[in-house]
Length: 162
Image (tube, rainbow, N blue to C red; front, side, top):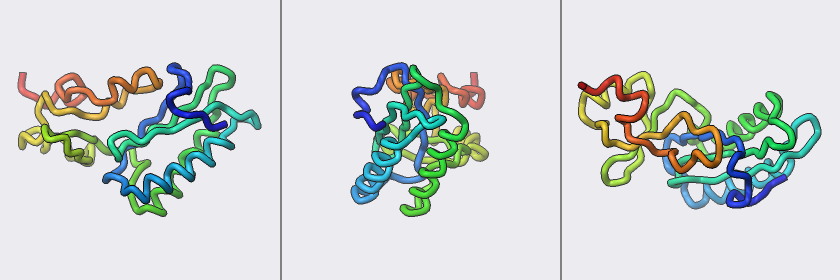
C-alpha cells in the first residue's frame, strides 16, 4: 500500500536509483503516477507492504519498503525493477543500470559517469576529494541524510594521492 514518503518508517529499506539525466516536469508527473499505482499494489507473497518513493535532485529515484511486517521477497523486488525498466523505456532515461557513479560539481550540477571510467574523472580533476558523490551504502530511509558524501570518504578515495 502506498504511503507518503514522509510517513514511511525511518527503518524502511530503500533502493537508490541514479537516472542518467534529470527528469523533466512531465516525466516526474508520469513517474509519480506510475509509481503511486505500483506502490499501492506492491506485495510480497500476496501481502501488501507499506511502500513509497521519492525523487531527489530531479534525478535520483528512491523506492522505500517498510519491512517491519514482512520482508520484501525476491519476486516483489523483481516486480519493482520491472516497473522501473518500463518507465525508463517510456522516458528514454537509464534508471536501473547500477554501473554508474553520480556526482555533483561545485555549482550543484549533477553528472553521471560509467563506473568503469571513473578513475579518469579523478585524474583529470573533475572529481576531487571534496566532490559530492552518491553513497552506495544507503540501505534505510534514515540513511538518506548521507545519500551524498564526499568522494574522499567514499570508495573513490583509493584514486586520490595520499
